[in-house]
Figure 1 (cartoon, rainbow, N blue to C red):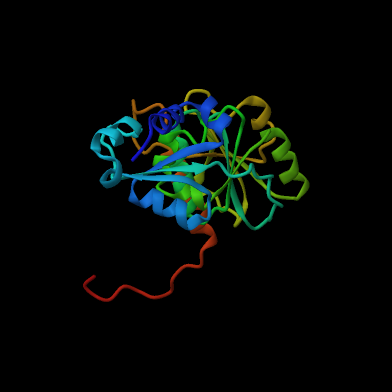
Figure 2 (cartoon, rainbow, N blue to C red):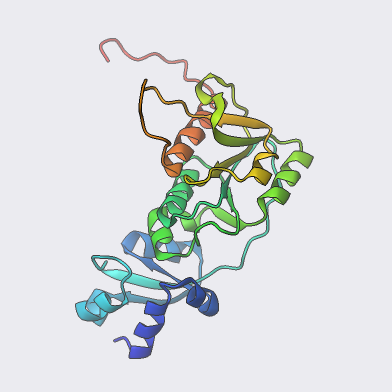
Length: 248
């Protein structure tokens, strides 16, 4: 069973101030709960529809359609910025406020083998239920660090690493030979990369539109992140020498 106090506590975790006060967040669905358990995170409680009933699950779910299982997970201790590896690729998010985009970018980072995602103070909370859901478990594998991006850039520059920013007026990413490592900064869709951070970049990149005339003003930031990561990995990955069989 589940008590009224437990229901009240779980419902309160939809708000950042209560997540921070209690040091807890929510993971829902078989995949996310399984990822949370296998990650070694401390689990405060696991609730299954079969155990607490559909009515109670509807009271505690953060989803429009309740999943069969929900876990209350302890927020891990905040991580310090990692030691910079010049040949490693990192992402930094500058005031990306949409939880779905932040979560999707963590999932993208996980897919492309990016160990750490740095975020400015005003990015969406990674423990927002919408962010957690969008990560599809990547939140338990990718290191996330909240920090001042200007100071982070100074650390990369001191280490001799390149800092790339995405801009509408940047160099065509498809025509640029990209290095194996560096820091890629993605700005918010509304405002782009803030001026103080933009000044720290060593290269300005752009994803060009292939349509002439009127087109969309910009790409969704998560889609842009996927394209940029793919281009970096394509340039740093040895090309396969084998040819396709005839007729394929």
